Length: 250
Image (cartoon, rainbow, N blue to C red; front, side, top):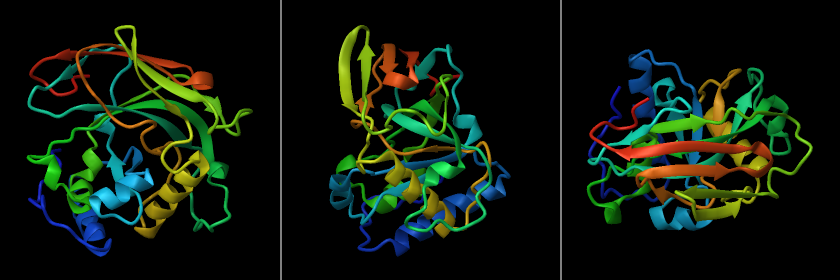
């Protein structure tokens, strides 16, 4: 199912009401196609990005099942796409969430396992200098593909999710290193925000959904090569990107 492209580029809204309306348009499109949600993603989690794009908080997108990539398969980069790479942590829900989260609630109560995740956003904007938060939400926060790690740690873990380093190498050269804490400075805080936002829009939060909490260390252009992502206690993820004419082949 193609993402909706409502032609909102260049529109700048001062509040989140217009942004929420755009998100509802996308969610209704998904519902019409009868496509189940695989989970949700947080975007713009670094406070510096809020002012850059005219937002007052992070934004949320939907993960669809067809976006999941199979480990070991070569990923083909469409030359017409603006494909990027992000390192993220993913939280797999262990049970349905039926109650509203309070500020002091620990969101990890509902999580079964934590996993490493590679996301492949597609920044498919004609002019990135004119992108607003409305554009970002209307294009489902650039969601395109994602790769889930096979290393799973049962929650609660016996180490801090905010205190280890993650890194990314391409063809043996380190191109990214960052803290696991993420843009909001805490994985617990990021997950709480994401779950609360989902509930605000009365969207489902059910067992086995995957929630990813935002880029660790920013985005990297998806150049061809062999990549090794190191997530410390969560293990490594390896993948290969090749140039081609098909976007994110499984």
